[in-house]
Image (cartoon, rainbow, N blue to C red; front, side, top):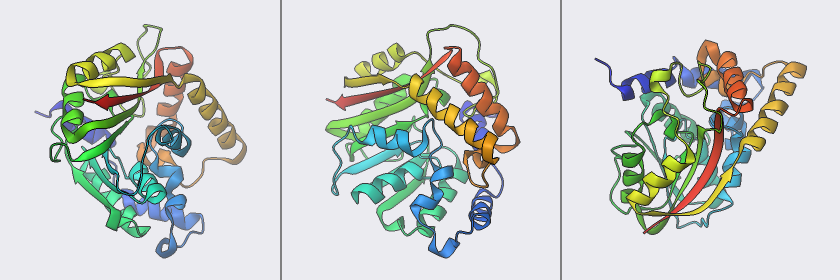
Length: 277
């Protein structure tokens, strides 16, 4: 019988992902042999706000060339590539979905950053990394698929050295307690969606040995982001390369449902940065 993690991985698994991304690059006139990390940005930041949100989060952290960064739930490697390209540091990405890990490695090699990145298949609840091996851990739109927030934070704390930082950007429950409209980008059915309020994240973090440094709601940012994105699609049509490639045939419905839940106050994208004891 499939486990919850099996069902989550299946939700994110799409056929011939590398080939479809390369095909979309070709439609845009981009030579794959000369592709850059910037060419991949429309598809490889699979979270609210894309690269802008990634940089907003990174700008709150102290990262240098010697910083060891762990990206938990790295997807196809977009955030890992953004970090290593910007700071020149080593990044390890871990993701539950084998197809994402394979794609992350292939795309990173394609843009010439494989020497500074490592991608591993594994669970956020049993990270395949050594104790105290990292200075910073990132979690961008991952906790929505994890019911056990306690173990998630315990594993992040184990992976970080004392004084390390855990930067989280997740979709959390909003102030309106209503059922969600499905399917959604992170889950097609309620059984694999585990949204929790910010208070649950704070409690899990404290129990694991973290101290909250800063918290910021990102709902207004998310609404503006999607309003602009939908306006561009209405005016220009859907681009060949975009996160819709990662969501299959129901991509449009998933995004519309997410925005509807966001505008209704049922969900609230939120940033939190913690320091490990």
